[in-house]
Image 1 (cartoon, rainbow, N blue to C red):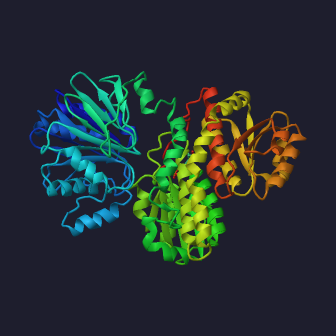
Image 2 (spheres, rainbow, N blue to C red):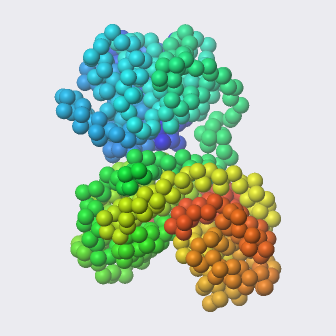
Image 3 (cartoon, rainbow, N blue to C red):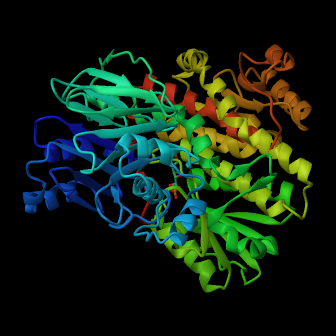
Amino acid sequence: MCGIVGYIGMREAAPILLSGLQRLEYRGYDSAGIALQNGGLPFMKQKGSVGALLAAYEESPAKMVGATLGIGHTRWATHGDPSDRNAHPHLNADEDIALIHNGIVENYSLLRKELISEGYAFLSDTDSEVLVHLVDRIWKTDPSLSLEAVVRAALRHVEGAYGLCVISPRDPDKIVVARKGSPLVIGIGEGEYFIASDAAPIVEHTKKVVYLSDGEMAVVTREGYQVKTIENVETEKVITELDFSLEKIEKGGFEHFMLKEIFEQPEVMRDVMRGRVRTEEGRVVLGGIEDYLDRLKQAKRIVICACGTSWHAGLIGEYLIEDFARIPVEVDYASEFRYRNPIIGPDDVVIVISQSGETADTLAALRAAKEKGAMVMGICNVVGSTIPRETMCGIYTHAGPEVGVASTKAFTAQVIVLYMLALALSKGRTISHDEMRLSLKELSQVPEHAAKILELDAQIQTIAESFKDARNFLYLGRGYNFPVALEGALKLKEISYIHAEGYPAAEMKHGPIALIDEDMPVIFIATRDSSYNKILSNIEEVRSRKGRVIAIASEGDTEVARLAEHVIYIPQASAQIMPLLTVIPLQLLSYHIATRRGCNVDRPRNLAKSVTVE
Ligand code: M6R
């Protein structure tokens, strides 16, 4: 999830690129850069915000002056820390090819080794840099080729996802772009063209756009654009008229970042698994912990520390790791762990989970565990944040920037990472090759299931309408769905300010049942698993006390419909997969209740996205 912008026309390119990058900063903001063509190929790139790059440009604009063609990038790190050297554009050694890239090159380490053995020197830790050297290599073998021909040939070697732009004074006055799995739009002006990863930087210049499809390349000049498939077959493109406000475009057409992030989940889930889930081979590849995997497998005990939503993901991690890998797991609130003098030693592994990588309590728990000699591992979304820097090894969630204060896509990304980790820890110990393949197959079907659940949005809106004035909510689930009940309740309270509690369903009779009356909505997560019959009895208990039941049930279930006022049907999957699915309707329900109550869902009162104080 990074931002791309390109310009070719008659105006000075640098100011257009820089203001375009500012519009794209919500897609990534850890470093930024631009490259222009004015005979040479001047570029500047650095760690930090686009504002900082703009300030640097304003101090010394001279080398950029006169360029009416250029490309720019704002980065959200996936491979390599946020730094000057990892910022895009990437250039070849002769500094006559510049390239920017969104997405992930899955086979980059293989390509990198190959290129290094041929004498290529790498200046960054990114996967993207292999692309510019591939282009360079092909061009060196046949300098008569056009820029588009060498880019096309280079892409034949690439596995993974890309949205990219390439420029070169060796074949000047054109921008070559290509898309596979990472969006690109061409904006059509009067004698000028814009390229971007979404319409946000384009809309102030022109409303006419062409969306590239997956597997397409385009050559953009001052005279026009030509779109072909990567296999070199010409394609017809339709010009679309934008009718969005700028603000809406940044949110991908959604009203709020939270809703956008909920709907992004199928894509994010694919990104989290990309290059890591090898179903056919029956294995999971987790580069960030590869060297520590044996030690992790030998752990006497794993302790997971986190806060809030990340703590809920940790609870699911406990079930997954114990289920698959049979290693004992404890889950602690980071804030409790750090102060309760826990018994931890060198045989233990402490896993800290954090979206931001900056949560003060989680960081303190990590440091406490390290002091006691435990091996510490991180699961984080923000590359280069403090937690990944202080842990010995870790796995990035690759969910892209999460702007809404209520965590949604980061949670599902964390659960997928924990599922992959549990399987990696099981391999060769507690799981057969066939079981492994089956579990990976199920995991790889999750994005499809998630997309299907998102289609239930209209039904969930209707439910939200009838419950928006409730003053309390109870969320109940068992097994893997118990942490989801906690997460559903947290989502509702933090953005709608309605009091909500999550419980394991069997605990209801030990207290919360006293709260049940006709004013108490109870959300049951009642999917078909080994405790299904027991949860049906819990629903009966609530019904007989006149509680209003909303149930999340497996497709095809008729029993639950008999008892519940509303049933949200989701695809059936194994218990281990279910949290990834059952949480989605709960996210949507919280969102729609909160907006109906007029709440600011992206910035709920009293909350911060990153809690860096105690
Ligand atoms: O960045 P972290 O994952 O460490 O943040 C932990 C919590 O502060 C966070 O999950 C919080 O509970 C969210 N607002 C939940 O939506």
